Image 1 (cartoon, rainbow, N blue to C red):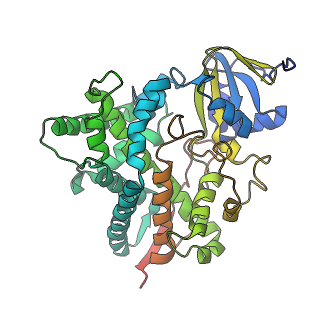
Image 2: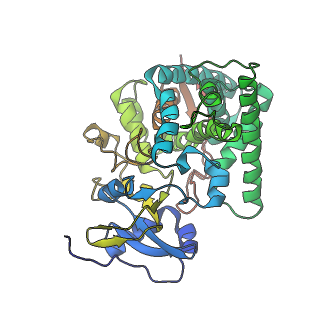
Image 3: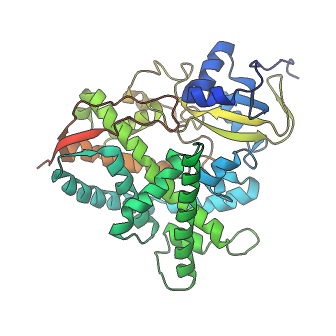
Amino acid sequence: MSEQREMPHEEGLDQSLNLLREGYTYISSRRRSFQSELFETRLMGKPAICMGGKEAAALFYDPEKFQREGAAPKRVIKTLFGEGGVQTLDGEAHRHRKAAFMSLMAPKQMKRLTEIAEVQWSKAAEKWVERNEVALYEEAKKLLCRIACEWAGVPLKEDEVRQRAEELSALFESAVSVGPEYWKTRRSRRKAEKWAAGLIEDVRAGQLHPSEESTLYVFSHHRELDGELLDKKTAAVEVVNILRPITAVSIYLAFTALALHQYPEQKSKLTSVNDPYTKYFVQEVRRFYPFFPFTGAKVKQDFEWRGMDFKEGTLALLDLYGTNHDPMLWENPDLFAPERFESWEKSPFDFIPQGGGDYHNGHRCAGEWITIELMKVSIDFLVNRLSYSVPEQDISYSMTSMPSMPKSGVIIRDIQLKE
């Protein structure tokens, strides 16, 4: 038996406001103070455990010890995830639903995605040439919404692109907002699900015929473990759970452009989509810049780890950003260095910008491959297919706003197509 130890404990009645104030650095700053992989605190009036680092991540993604049901606040479920979505499931129900998502990630599907992205990037670039300047983040939301819908088999008229892009982006831009902004986001979720539900009705009625390999087809025909067709509302949630995260890659594209501006010496190394260094660059952008701050689960049943007690029902937060910047895992973590991924051992628990663990049986984001492929295509355009200038602007980003992004949205000017 391990020696009994007391888990480091943060003093105070409740730390919820400090979590919101400090954002991405809340967990890692306290882990440093406690010199511990984890500590106990109080959030939303209840005990909570905050965790970070490779070994803590491996523990967090153990399905025998942690569950997702009941972990995410209801207000976040009603904006970011959607009620009944795969992120809220556990056990066999989760594995069965996750298999539907993973069926969309086959190599053939990834190839089709990159082909669609190439075409849509070309169309967007031709329009940008005619404009004085563009805010890349705002344009990326519309670009990625087009890519997401075409790849997912979702019909999208040109005159509704802006509306759908704004509805989908509201779900990740304002998921933890309060007041009027929160209710606006709730309305965006309802509109997006109503749109998706209408398309599912059309598919099931034989009035719409998407490809059998598409998201819309898969979830229109998906059956649960009991053999029953997935109810229309939940099927709509899952369609949105493909469209939303693809649109959210716009945050990474803004940070990609920022990285190219801040580290111009990198451009000469990014020669093509399939060059290994391009993927290293993508991974370093995902490691270095903030995206998801943390993710949550609940202790499934009482257990002991390294002499410390974990009580059933306790909320646990895994520090995604802090783990990606952990000096015990990454040499000079605050240095932007894509070449570090040349020797990375591909652990599922040390590099976790979109979650960790196993894709098929765990809660690691199924769309991680989509993110990587879209970023590779985007880098090729920004470096090898376009020329542009970057005017003076506020490119700073906050470590307290969640999600964070460059304040200016990364404005580019004098856009030209390279020969």
